[in-house]
Length: 137
Length: 387
Ligand SMILES: [Zn+2]
Image (cartoon, rainbow over all chains, first blue to last red; front, side, top):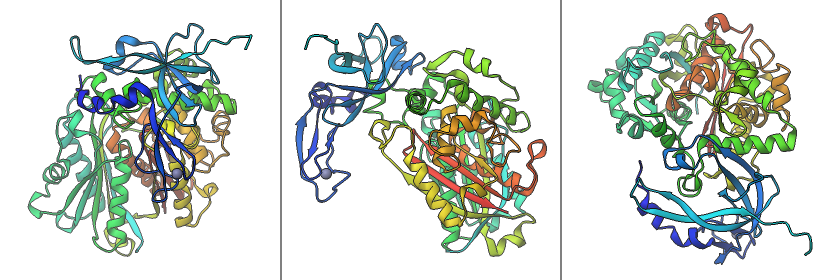
């Protein structure tokens, strides 16, 4: 069992609310936040931005054999999601009884991500769930 | 910069080496290489060793001094440096040694690689390997190493019509090659059905799509080409050495079905060597997962993007074809002691170019290539070797 707590506490604001960086020089957005824009480097103009969290599944897998921390969740879906503002992130897909598909629209949900040992610290973060397709709007 | 040649090689048996410790294995490979090269300890100027995670696998850091000590070189006090680039640590050690000799700073240099992975549980080993991915923004959310390659595989299938059967054929081929390699971890043929019926790890990748957990060590000795004829009867020239990097996390890449680090390293290597991909006779590529070999043969420039699966199915990469890929059995079947892999790849190519590859010997192999990847593609290292 590894001890992650300090490393993950540091990142709590970004994990709770998908806060990232927008570069006004090249108009690209980044998640997690970056101090240096890889396009503009010294010419960057960076500002904090908050992502809506809605996005599209680019690719995915179903994990049957996980590391010790996630073993109790198997099988679970993991995907790379392109947020509507552009950046891509890796996250679990939950509440998808019919499975995951490339191109599926998803929204963020707040869930327990992991626990350190039987009585350890519980940490929370963002997962994603399918957006119900409605035929009328 | 001056031309550099390989004057000696050595490699231990790969596999579950309950009988041998990390230091035993590296001494064994080192002594084989020194004897192969006909050099004495006094002639060695420096040592570079690739090791991904001695700290996690055997709770031993400071591998540089350890290796020099147990290779019997401690009283010569030569510089000994451990380098790390996850699964590309071995390739990186070779490249550091090449740069040291090419620059004229050192003459006779050992490049070694070692990993001892079976002293910990498979869960601990998987967690250590996952540290090659982005711990905070991939693993924290439940990503595993096979899962990252599985997501590349899924998209490759969707875009190019690659099938899982084609991926399984990479395993079938590499297991077949390994049967002819005495140092390989597995001497066991597998069929497409065996791969498809093996337990699922991360869909679409099954257990038999994945390289194993292995122990092993390898070493090569370099010298300036102008001295190589005196130190070896069969020197092999290093025609190119290149390295490239990319984002740590897979999700930040330009394209999820291309390892841009491989593309850039390959372009630089072919330009240095002044040759075209079609001139390569034999290649050891980074098949940590079966999809990894399909991506590699595309990104190295051997086949068009999207054609790697078909090329495998048509046997264009099998032993004895115009481009034989992973004659050692690859990471898949020869084994993948991560820090040793990049050096073992050079060992295999040297044997093929010298005509010493036994039952898997190719006819007329003149130019060989090695391709070593760190993580899901954050580092790629390419070497081109020629007779
Ligand atoms: Zn910018």
